[in-house]
Amino acid sequence: MAQNNNSKNPLLKKLITLLLLILLLQVPISQISELTHDRSTTKNIALQELRRVVGEAQIVTTPTLILSLASFKPENELNTPAEELRHIHMSLIPKNLMVRTILKSELRYRGIYSLPYYVAKVHMEGHFELPYDSEISMEERNNWKIRRDVAANFHMALDNRRALRQEIHAVIGEEKTTLQLVEDGENRKSIELSATIFLNEKKLIPFAIDLEIAGTGSLRFAALAENSTVKILSDWNSLSYVGAYLPIEKSETTDGSEATWQIPGSSQGAAYTLQQQTWINQSQKENLFGVDFITPLDVHRMVERAVKYEALVVVLAFLAFFLFEIACGTQIHGVQYLFLGAALVLFYLLLLSIAELTGFSLAYLLAAGIVIAIMTCYSRVILERSQHSWIVASYFATSYGFTYSLLTEQDYSLLFGSLGLTLILATVMYFTRKIDWFALEHGLRSTEPVNPEL
Image (cartoon, rainbow, N blue to C red):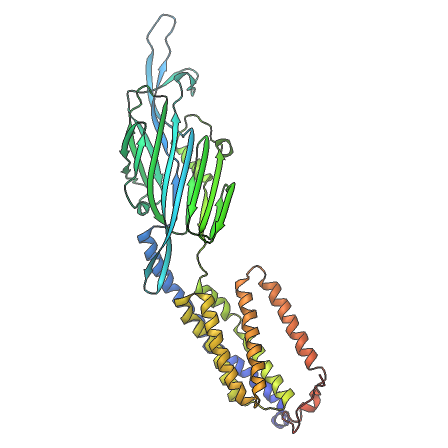
């Protein structure tokens, strides 16, 4: 009896058919989703190999001067000579520091995948101001003096040993030198560089360093000095300024970007006194700042997001053709709906394959254009009127444009999506308000087109 009722109710039969087709189309779309994930994994493996070769995110630290100090017990009233008690090493941060960095972007390829990276030419200059012995006060009972007969150590560190593109040349005091690599047994990733200098009777020790490093993702600075100025010039016009400090000046053009930081030592808790090197290292970690390099959209992530809208796109497309059936008196077979759904699913496969070569935006345009052309030509036949095919083309152009806005405007996607669905529902309700649905239950196809009296 139920089967007989269904055969007499073609409207219900059509709706059940469309529902089954929508569920059937989820099988290939789930396979496309898995394929997207697999391709993303393959890309990440390739890019990780490139990062190991080129270099990862880099940190440029402040150079310090490690001094040897001796503690003396002062002379007593009996004129007993001062007695040397013990030796320690303390570090001194620069009095002034100026860093100028020129960033140049390059590409490295692995198959069809490309990895953008930067080459940074860093010029760093400043000076140390040695304290007088009378200014050194660490223990009240003892006098401390800088041992000028013992060489001091000019020291700086880099976060990644693969970063260096060439030797680091420096001018310290009046001597030209090359910073030497110091192996760190505890951390095989980072490196320490040093040079030996002789103090003699110097009060001011100027220095200038030139280094060239490569990296990906981000570049950070630790400008720990009494007064620091850092300037970055980059041909990369999509930079994000992050960290403990923001630039006081910045500008971006189509040719690149420029930013300047000016940081007083007081804002970093850095007093211009002798400090333990461990304290300086910790302070530098807490006061990092710099830039992140904004890369183009991850095409696989964008395709995965697009696939999530597939069910909505198919439902709305079937709804549009179903309304054509009702309003125009044209009947579309279930197999024809299947072909239409297959074209909609094909869009996501085209999007994935083209996006890996051209980027997401151009791939979306090409894939949408191909699918819209297929749908327009096919609808011209099944809807039996050429003017209806142009309505179909306009509908799908609007649909794909709306979906693209949801994908690219992440901050407002929820608002755009909810407003869009509200508008679609209101439009469907308005254009179908005069349709006699009870009459349609007795026959989906009429000898006369159904007139909704629009």
